[in-house]
Amino acid sequence: MSAFVSFMPLFKLAAVFIIMLTAIRCRLGLMLSICLGSMTMALLFKLPASLWPATVGEALAQPQTLFLAVIVALILLLSDVLDKTGQAGRLMDSLSGYLRHPRLRLVFFPVLIGLLPMPGGAVFSAPMLGSVSEKLRVPARDRVLLNYWFRHVWETWWPLYPGIILAASITGLSIGHIALYGLPGMVVMLALGWFFMLRPGVLELDAEAAGEVHERNHGKVLRFGLPLLVAILGAVGMEVGISLFMPSVPFEYGVILALSASILVAVGQNPGSVSIVVRSVTNKHLWVMLGVVASIFIFKDTMQAAGVIRELSELAGGTTALVVSATLLPYLVGLVSGITLAYVGATFPLLTGLLAQAGLQDQTAAYVMLSIFSGFTGIMSSPMHICFVLSCQYFKVDIGGTWRKLVMPCVLLISSGIVYFILLR
Image 1 (cartoon, rainbow, N blue to C red):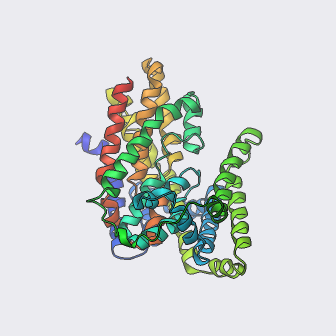
Image 2 (image 1 turned 120 degrees about the vertical axis):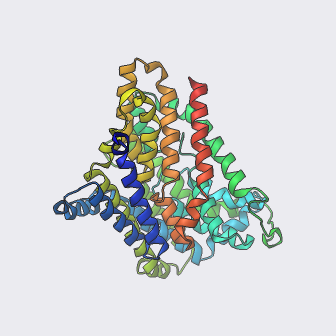
Image 3 (image 1 turned 45 degrees about the vertical axis):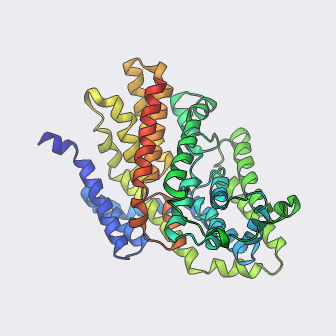
């Protein structure tokens, strides 16, 4: 009976996810389904009803919510301009001389956009992948999986990701150290993505419909790709500059400025496209997306206010504390929140404290990698992950059916992390 009580937080979380997925399945809509999950979680974890309005208000007013809403809106505006002016198609045509293999063309933009440390960035690459996959007659569900999975192949090591920076700050390891040890995670992600989503036999392509392969033309690629280059290089450059010279300024300002500049470039390259921007601002699709963003932050803040992470942390007691804090807790927090900063910020302080108590500081790198693989698997398998939600929304597919396709790749992802941990030790 005591074991049942100690694992009660896990049963409660399972009930929350079942209710959310059932609501989505019943076509209640993503925003309302996530809000229903928040209410269920508040009830099960006994958050007083008097605190609900304040929790919602704080979730909507916090800077992270506003930043993400602006970033997603700018991404959608840029995507609309590139799509409706035909520039996305022209860019893909100009790249066909370099990307001669159709499967490489499918994942090129998700991988490229993955370099941009931007929340919700999968919705940026979605129109580009959509342009290619339409010609190749790729089913919508496969488009979501390719866009979502390959967008995140960098996340275990790319040193500009806030999660890697925060992990370095908490654990005392250098960013370069974490990046070096995390690099095999990208190899694993690429291998799993190829085997489960991209290889012949799993994804059949209509090669004859792939379109003409154009001659290589550097000038066309640069001209048609200039808005993307401004967005990616500008955001990365500004994040580095802000972190070095203005560390107190949120890095999101750099992303917003870079995206705004890229929209101006795209509009300047396509006379008459101002009307597209105006129509996009009033488009229902944009506001539905922003509603989903708001609901995810309401869910995250409800989780914090209800003490969900605190109850999960209590599972890390006894002789198994170190293993639990390095695997189960990062995975669960990643699964519940779908946010890298959440699992790093909530579980890494506990992990470093337990390592110090056990006198195992010399194994910090091994345990940090185990936690990164576990937490990353959690966010990749989370139906709350903003990139997954927005990708499903963009390609108009059912979350439940698509989510099931992620189970086996995620099982192997966390298994590879455990094997890697053993090798590092």
